[in-house]
Image 1: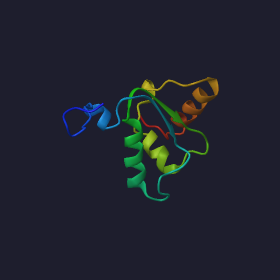
Image 2: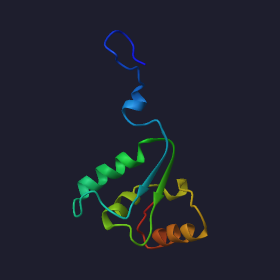
Image 3: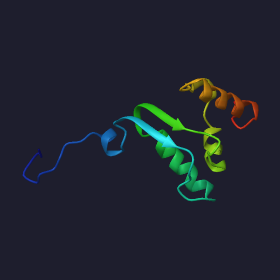
Image 4: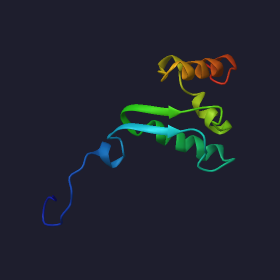
Length: 101
């Protein structure tokens, strides 16, 4: 229902910015625009900042090179892995210096 006679809706700033999602799933297997690092970084930033609680990052051997650059910016000590396989994948990224912290 709206307020006033104009039928406007009351909303929070967080909702307007899309920040009231309890969780977001980001698939890192495809870039929004292949070969455009800036676009990929902007998309990654948007995906990583639109949740109010949990961000799931789907990463695998198919994760694109540009998305790996975005993932390098994350502190691996703050990441929780889903299972033993994902922990091994994260460890392999750290060991290959793909994530540097």
